[in-house]
Image (cartoon, rainbow, N blue to C red; front, side):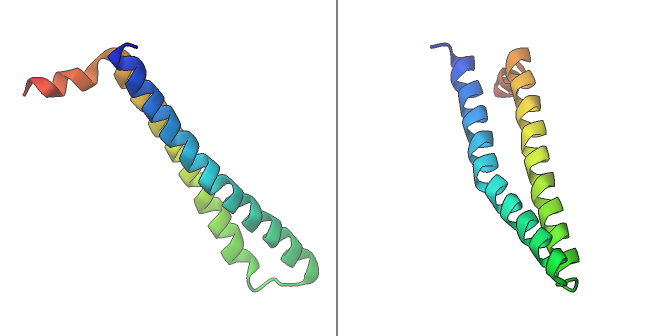
Length: 84
């Protein structure tokens, strides 16, 4: 297996692990926010929605970092730093 393939697999595995961990948390918070909003729990609703938005931002950031890392691996940029 080429060296680049191992690096790509590592980046993808870590991104998937983070998304699998954070995704259900965001889903549960969004679901709870929906339930509380329907029952009149408006005091806690902004906090839950903010928490869900932050979790969603984490997922988007992890996926963006993964795509950037895959581009770096394809471009050979990670090997350039080892020259110094």
